[in-house]
Length: 261
Image (cartoon, rainbow, N blue to C red; front, top):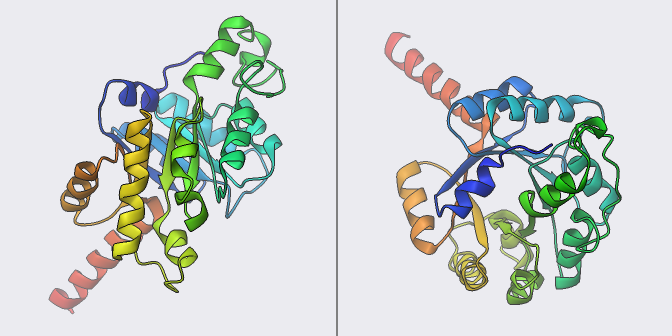
């Protein structure tokens, strides 16, 4: 499907890219995120996946609302990458990368030959069910779809220059929680000096090769955003939609009970 990749264009124009994570598997939540002015929605299939047509409906909602659907899949299965691209993902993200070769495998699985080894079939939503599956679609797929990996363990941070040197890799999402665990902190500690140093090292390598780093932020929004923008992060993920909803409801209920009884 030859369509505008809002996230890709924002990065190309040097703008700050904003998005959120959708946990509810609701197409309406995806549409709402797009209508709120966000650039992308991350739909996570690493920890949950209904294995039905729900993901397709969410991607159609993203197309309607003109927001880039970023789909996260687990590593080690190139066919999952192919499948989410066939149903219309505008960005992919693969978790738990531990080596430069694993990152390269992600790029190869996401690109059509000669840039990779993605299988060719235009009979999909992305290819317009064959109506738009010619050379232009192949070129669009190879150049407009964003390819990213998770940076979330000590091993990959030690190889970070090699990761960002890979042609065709566009961005990473740094995972402070898993990184905290990988260095033996025993719990997620995003603000721990060692975690912050790893984020800085990742951003420096990404900047060197013209790539982008994403990081999740929380409240206070402005302070968190400023901190990581100053560090060099170009993509900010504004929480998880159900977490934000829970926070609003919890705050409202607590306020009412305290003031009214």
